[in-house]
Length: 157
Image (cartoon, rainbow, N blue to C red; front, side, top):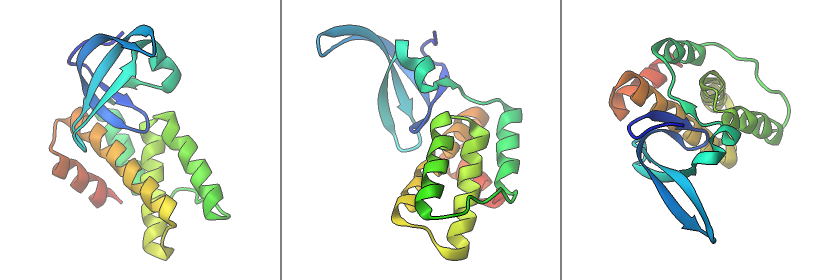
């Protein structure tokens, strides 16, 4: 169980700091929830404590993990061939994993694909979301600003 002040990653939403743990009655069920503040996008998210393992909540990455993810951004990854929908499904699975290296792969490959031949509307939205997820984790792990994290990501690609 995490505590107030812990920095965690909530896959598909990004990294944040637990502001409080509170008991809520939702649809007649009383459960404990983490109230997570995600600074990148200034979001507040409630996460059921008991569901954290199932949805892939994990502590924010270490300096070494962030460094590895940043280095992955600059590497040519194996492009998923086929239609945009096939790429979309494969990339969505990577994002859902919450693995920072896989998220960095998605950001890098979609950015390069966009620069070469453009992206579908769905892939553009996915790229934006993946970039925010990665950016939020870099911010919290390295204690840098939103702008500094984005610059690190962009310069690595």
